[in-house]
Image 1 (tube, rainbow, N blue to C red):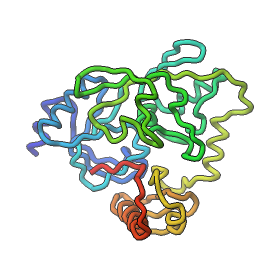
Image 2: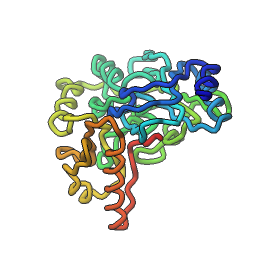
Image 3: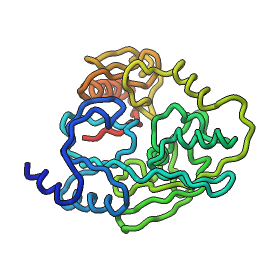
Image 4: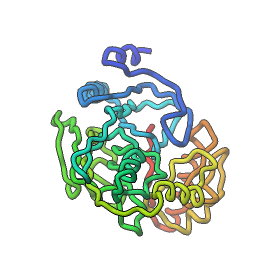
Length: 290
C-alpha cells in the first residue's frame, strides 16, 4: 500500500491489528501506529500526519478510548516516554507521563503520603489522568490536580517544552486544556503530597470497593458520559445490542464482549437519542477515534 511505503520513511509507524489498545478490547486494524519516546519522535510523526492531512490521536493506556471502526485511519501515536519517578523532597516527586497512576499511589502509600487513592482502580497513565482531569466524581469535587504543583508538556505549535501550573490547565469537571487536543502532550508533572497516618491500605480498600460496586464481568472503559440524565441511563441498565450492553451493575458503563465497536456505538447513539427526546444533551467522557 502506498501509504505504508511513505510511512516507513519516517520511523517506526506500521500497520497493526490488535485488541490491546482499548479497554473495550475491540479488534481494530490501525493503518498508522507508532510508539514515541521523545518530543523529537512525536514532532516527526505529527508533522508527517499534518502534511498528509491525517488526523492523529495520542494514546496513553486506552482506558477511556473507543476505536469506532474496524479500520482506523487516524494516526495513533502511543506515549512511551521513559517511565520515571524522581524524588524531589520528602513530599514532592516528579513523575513522567507514561507511569501508571497505581505506581504513584504505591509510592505514596509506602511513604505515608496522602494521595488520590480513589483512582487506584483506574487503569490510566499519569498523562492520561492529567489530560482528562481524573477525579472521584463530580459530587466529591476532588481531582488529581489537588496534588499537582506543575506540568511539563510539549507544544508542537512552538516546538518546545512548556511548564504550567494547575490553575492554567484545569477548565472544569473532566476538562483541561489538553482534553481533545492532539498537538501537545504531557511529559511529566511535579506532585506534592501531605504527610499522613494511614489506617489500613487505601489502595486495597479502593480496589475492594471497586470490585463490589463496579462491573468487571466484561471489558469496559468505565464511565461513558461525563454529563448525562441519571434516570435515562438507569432505565438503560442491562439493555443489550449484540455482545455489548449497558451494565446492569454500574450505571453509565458499557460492557463489551464483541470484537466489533459497532454495537457500542449503537448503544451510545440510543442514549443520545433518548436524551434528545427530553431536550437534554449528554457529553461523552470516552473518546471515540475513527
